[in-house]
Image (cartoon, rainbow, N blue to C red; front, side, top):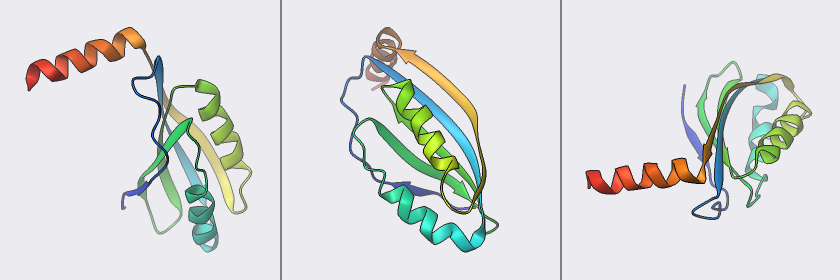
Length: 112
């Protein structure tokens, strides 16, 4: 399995909230090139997308970050509609509030 970052526009920093989600997609191997093309065109200031792992059989682990939960839900819905996608499922979702994010930044700064 390999990792591949799909560079998208940065989310406004610091966000008021952050939603981190991972999903698994199964794509027919013959459609992988078309799938990667579609994924790279998902330029949207509301969501960041990263392919965390991928197999030759078309099993793909995708990680997303967004300041809006709806952006992740919309992305997953669009993902399921792509040609060659056999299935896509949300595996993990974490919500971080602005307070959680401030605490995390403070902790990281203290470690430096």
